[in-house]
Length: 465
Image 1: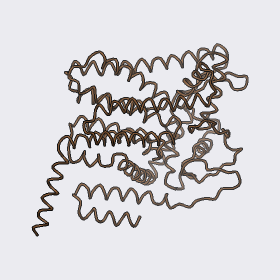
Image 2: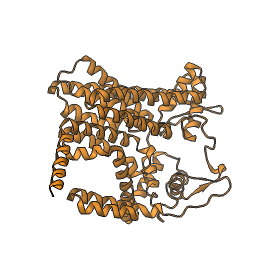
Image 3: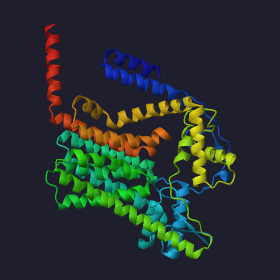
Image 4: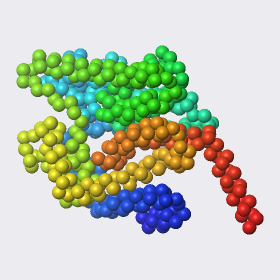
């Protein structure tokens, strides 16, 4: 921290006012994060494991609900692995997706959190007669590789500078390795960004969009709908970029822009309606088999994540840090009979968050400042020189606006929950693309030549002196 402060001092002396303001904000955010970073590391007992990232709670193996680790090569949460096993058994018994078999009882799967794996992977395993772990690796790995290859082709067509194309290939490879290390459904946001954004930008430069462009945008909408099923809001991040791009940035006439937006929207709507039908058909089947069947709520546990996210910085109000058990214990203290991740469960935690913000606003501010500092560092690493190029060479306002809306939305999981890579791969991928496009635009506008002339003049002045 001392070295960072001394480096910042140099920048504050020599940088422009905007740079000074940014550095002050960054240092304040990192200072807010330092109490957490310097916290005490607790020793674990025999066989115990940490409850979660940034948590001081230790759990024994018998306390963990899903103790069997996933046998897949790509990382997968034990809870999702258990759900996949039930889904495969149920699909082989009934032939209906999202119906699980728990012992001898049919149960719904994919209820409250990212149901896409429970829909796609068991069908893949059953149709190809593959083991479930192999099917999971093929599905996630194939999705990532396919999306990244598709996006790389679009990006190489979009970029103009050969050097930036080489840089793009390198950065995409690094991003792909990061996604493979993170694994699980957390790689889906980055895959959606890489697969769709370069092509939307490329086709937006066409003054006369044809049928092929409308077809591609319709397929992109279908893909974004599937991405939302696999990882909640992963397709929404891309959609928030596509709407300003197609509506304001595209070179087509207003009629062409409207048709492009309609193609994308219809694809997304068709995908959403199809998966809604899948859930409805599943529920109707289970009602016909079980008189006491109650539909499971299909919602992402938002307030659960936000509540435990307030434990990112150590504090006495959300004791234990970022750990699911912290939220479970809080709900049990209010309503012992509340079902985990039910609407009642979510309402209780929403009220707890409101009470904490109302009575302890400093807790919220310190957490946001700490998370913002880490997000800024990740943004610098992902955007790197492209962020400087974006400041020096201003692009059309609609392009910058589209990217920053999507980047801000992609940063929300890190800001509201915890700023760790697995929650921010979409944010990182969007910044990588923005940095590459900004660098390519700056070079195309002659920024390198102007910089070389400027250094040449300074060198002549120094020699004359």
